[in-house]
Length: 376
Ligand SMILES: Cc1ncc(COP(=O)(O)O)c(C=O)c1O
Image (cartoon, rainbow, N blue to C red; front, side, top):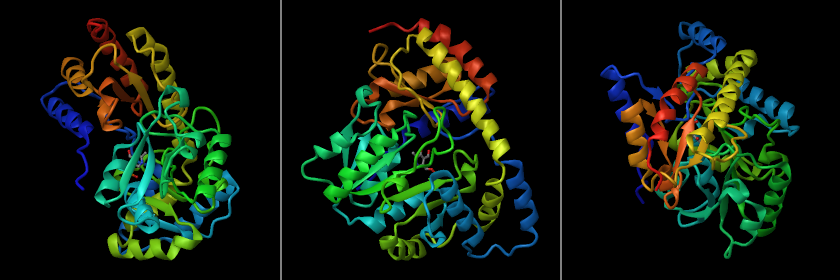
């Protein structure tokens, strides 16, 4: 099955064209940090470029460091051999789905959710079972929703913090979801790519509740290394050899240069936490200002760097709305339809992974623009 296109790419293309023509564009359409890799990672990359042949390679020190991170942050003991390095969370998701499920399997996921979940499932001929999640569950799946599914799906994808909402599941809900899934034989894939980006305290890993879960993660968000294409899958014991067979056939190894840099990035906590402090400030500014723009129905962004806003009083065409906002103010945002094909025509997503002056400027431009929009 062919996946749907990512509509934010259309907006981004237009934004880049406008920028090339001299327009002062502010990029709030993509979920990527506007900062580069941390200085320590770049220095490590410079050092190894002259010294390493850059062949196929899986960095044992990086797998060990990631395992140690799970021990320190989540008190879970993971054999580093269960960690498979990938070119980002995207291939880690392909690996996880391929290792755990068969074509035709039904996989449940929240709607709204990250566009590529649906697309990847379709590309692998699996059936996405999209479950509408509204403000009453903070746009997240609950154990009760999963309990009520009849028949039970083969698998479940959860994300906490989530894209596009930034909402976080409580430890109690995660434990309850793990218990329902265990009882009903539903295998969990947990996308933990936004770990490290929380404004409400520690975020648990699904591995704390379900050792049989497959966890995907990457260096694209907290570590600010999206273009370095480095991520990982934590495979459960029973699927580790299957997952390794898939990675060998589909992807071979992650980029060697990025593995060296990624290992160094793990020590750059001060710089990376500095980015989180900027996001925290940006989030506060947006939460304070957006209601004044008439956007009063927004998901509480506990983590990640997104605000998911209901614009149903202004439009039922989020693509056209975001395009007009871009061409008339230079502020690029993502239309809701990417994340929710049913209700997303009346939602939009702001990414606040930019600098605070950019957020201030975006708000200056958006205030009169939103005030001038007719309420339908
Ligand atoms: C929830 C989620 N999962 C996975 C990805 C893919 O990330 P990566 O760059 O590591 O492939 C993204 C990217 O935005 C995302 O938002």
